Image 1 (cartoon, rainbow, N blue to C red):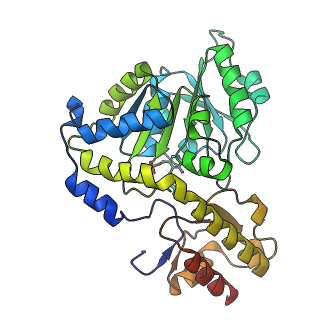
Image 2: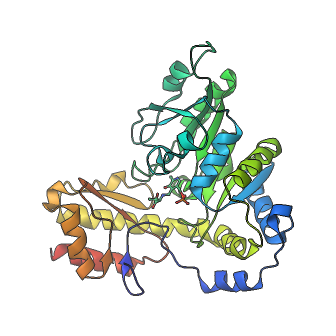
Image 3: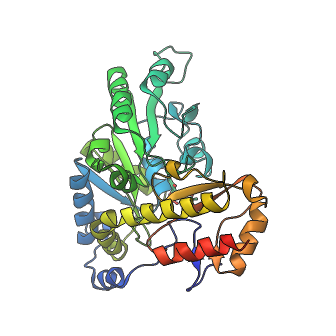
Amino acid sequence: MAHQGTIDLRSDTVTRPTAEMRKAMAEAEVGDDVFGDDPTVNSLQERAAELLNKEAGLFVPTGSMGNQVSLGAVSRPGDEVICESDAHFLHYEGGSVAAHLGLVARTVKGSQGVFTSGQIALMIRKGSEHNPRTAVVAIENTHNAAGGGVFPIEEARAISKVCRDEGVAMHIDGARIFNAQAATGTPVAEWAACADTVTFCFSKGLGAPVGSMVVGSSEVIKEARRLRKRLGGGMRQVGVIAAAARVALETGPDRLTEDHANARRLAEGLAERFPGAVDPASVQTNMIYLDLAPIGMSGTELSARLAKEGIVTLGGPWPTMRLVTHRDVTAQDVERVLQVFASL
Ligand code: TLP
């Protein structure tokens, strides 16, 4: 359990709302958002759509629901979604694409989470009645299981072209798309231009306590809104949450470069202490996947040792351990973590 005073490296989801967010929440103008009456939500949706240069936005409770309503809005049960073999929604969202959408997930092996337009061109079904219909291709940017790697914009554009030529939709699980923007300088709208739907999260590096957004055409968002209701995600006076998300959207993106610098520094220090445990050059954003073999400890043991020093990590019977930097991890905290690792 993390508490005040500890350094929590489990995820960028762990940040607590800032004073500015709490003030905005307390003062938020609200209405019933299922009736479309919440001015704070409406304004957040419009702002998100503007930033990503799409017609409309839809506020959803979680990134998982964002992925579901996005994929569902462009498919029918029995259709196929093509995704990377380590896609978040495939492994960590409770089988939702199968259970709730009735989709067949067909995977493509990427390199560091990145697959190519050539691979996709070979996979898209050509309309035989024997096959599921390929409805949508999904990319993840940044890619969680691939260590926060950015999906290169050129490749996203090439995939988008293949999809459009074949009449297949494209979705971006952009839970951390603002990290991709911070790492490359490529505006989020450039990635969004490739896709029919984009999900991004306020509750990760941007630092809000709750909430995600889906953006797309008005037509797609109308359908996504119907699916949100079906899944039980129609919320009422939710402006109290959207207000914090708004602060996160306005203040979060520029700050992410700090998290990236902290992750890089952490990786450099760890690589010095334990050669081979991590290649600092591979750290593009705010995540590190530490190879535990050079450290000579299981994840469970390492996690327990770190916890004694007030450093919270996700340790388990896995060969790697993910460390994530975020707003509540300072450069000083990173030095403290490195001291603890040095003493192991
Ligand atoms: N990822 C979380 C947990 O699942 C582990 C994390 O700590 O990284 N897409 C991507 C790429 C994600 O990383 C996540 C969450 C989601 C979607 C789902 O978001 P939520 O948790 O809001 O449903």
